[in-house]
Each structure stands twice: as structure tokens, then as C-alpha cells.
Image (cartoon, rainbow, N blue to C red):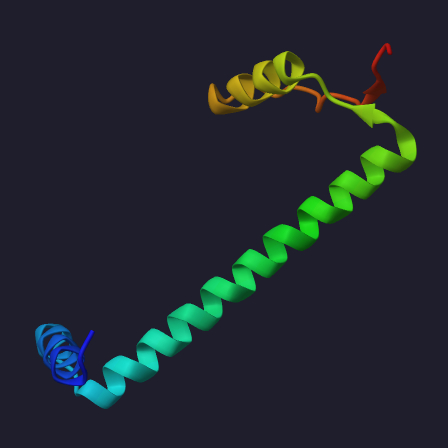
Length: 88
């Protein structure tokens, strides 16, 4: 996108938000940084869970987890499903 179009687009967006173009850019950078941090946290949790699964071989079948989650949504006090090794 040409520079002039980018500047016009940035000016339109910042004016609609009631801020200066500079403040708009800083806010966009902060939002992007926060998004990257959340993604990194998500990836770290996923890696840790996968490592635990690989080390123990234990997992929770989806039907058990789904029943648990649906019961929680309904406000029922239910025990959390326990991981177990699945048959080969």
C-alpha cells in the first residue's frame, strides 16, 4: 500500500477513535504486543500439556471432558475427570 494511502487510513482510524495518529499507533503497538504475549502463553501451556501427555501417556477422553464441562455450565458440582492411559 502506498505511503499516502497508509497515512490517510491511519488518520481516518485515529480520528474516529478520538485520538492523535501518534497515540493511535502506540495503542496499536501495545495491542499487538499483548496479543503476541497471549499467543506465547497459549503455546507454552500447550507445549507443557503435550509434554505431560507424552511423559505419562495419560489423557482424558473427549466425551468425559465434554460431560464435565456441560455439567459445570449447568452449575453442577462435579469431579474433574482423571487422566488415564488409553488402550493401544
